[in-house]
Image (cartoon, rainbow, N blue to C red):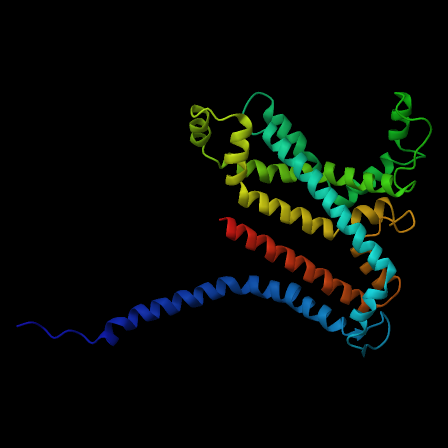
Length: 306
């Protein structure tokens, strides 16, 4: 005679308790990270949004003035100039930095004699702090003490001194772009190199057996298989360019005639020179919205292509 089956509730209870225990353990592991993110990201973000709705002097009580801070943005000529310059700078830096980084990654992709030394040499500038690198370039490009003018004049490429950081908008922009290329090319090369080495060698060998040229292999195999890595690198480049501050604040001080003033420099001036934290917070919220839209579009395009 068969024994009666146990009720389902009796057998399911231990499994349910184990699942609840695992959930609590997972929550405990995640709690420190959630606390840090909440205290140092969510709370400050909420405070910035709240400040953007007020006239908030650096010294003195805030007063609600919504939506005046946002309405005044359209009348700020410096903000419009900075927005256009930041967009132009972002396009120039993204194109040049991606091309240089990808080229370096392709050069050091395969293991051979001396490649390890090249990888180290290309990556070394990334170990220098960005502010320190900016000060280094400021000294090198100085028209008084810098060696660049003297070297170019000695080899006949320059007739007289050139003020690289404040002489004209083009030279000031070129100085900042050169600094960014030197500082970040090796770092982005390392990310792209990781993506290149993740592609199976057998795929390349099969393509060569089928008679594919080097350009066809690059266009139809390398680039498509690196889609995710390329999307990551482009996102980092565009985000970093839109938030540019150190290179312009140290190298050019936004000059000449505010021609190299970035959006973050406008935020800094509004907050700590004009002493209007509410206006600075409004610009910050708008810039954050632009970054969110860009990342959503980027991820959407990546998902569709995938």
